[in-house]
Image (cartoon, rainbow, N blue to C red):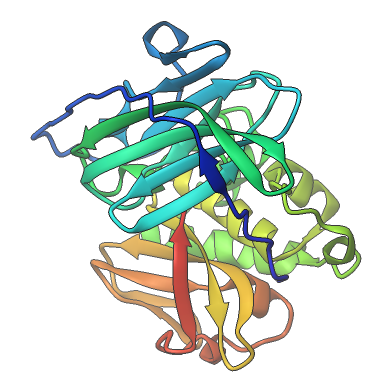
Length: 294
């Protein structure tokens, strides 16, 4: 729970645009693990900067680039913009399309000096998601896991006797609250490019709010439960924080004061709950301000 630095971009260079139009009318049932993949043979780009828009209907875009300096991947839709810090060694990254259907613009930006960035490559795309839940059921940059991840195996193991999604959430909720504590030392040395590794969090048994939210999203998505990881502010101190929203088709109680409402997004803040705050602190969510979904 720390104030994260905002990457301030001073944009330069002309736009190099690619375009696609994707549509589908099939609603897929979500019952388990859904993968993401970077397709180099379908990626657009040049000179070591590539953007793969071949799977946007599945709720994500992928990119790869190399540079001797810092890279940023920018996602823009309407008046919303978010800047991810990219790998600069060519390692592909996957980014969720969390603003729904519409026209997106993607940019790979390279740091020139101080806060000044220049565009390496850009692509534009009209997106129609096969299912609005797609971005919240897959692995991505901040919610990163594979079928072989320990957090996925643990999720499957502890929920094997769950009779429905409500019980699945309860088992995962109880596991994280019981086994993960807040890491007060880590937050003191955290850098702005930090990205959680869920298996390491689970192994160490401690983490910050970003870690709690990432681990929960991994374990819940692995069981086919749509889960958002959220960045935003919490009143009354305007604390920059991370938490989850989950979507179930059932109504019921996860704990004595935490009720899930069917067919609606329900807020779940495991950082506070696991470290002594009552579920009632979350209440109806009026003290939370959502800024970014992942």
